[in-house]
Length: 119
Image (cartoon, rainbow, N blue to C red; front, top):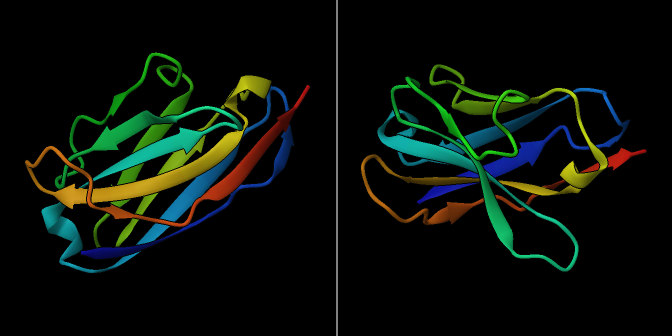
């Protein structure tokens, strides 16, 4: 498995920007696909963005498309989620997750970082 630690969450005003980071250790980072998920109070965990081991062609949920950008730096064992034009409905705990390249299930999760967007 991969050990994951998220950072960068904080309180921000609507329309603002944040960059979340997720540092990985353990399994060879360049062999894992990565994802960002979020969970708002009283709601289930939802997919936000994903990126393959190579970093090519990240993909996004409809709510994130056009506002969020996911990237990775395999030399630093880190993935990022740049979030722009934030909305109050983006308020959630954000988690990064890892899965073996090409597999379906994410099997490693971080502890989460809180993002709060005020109106």
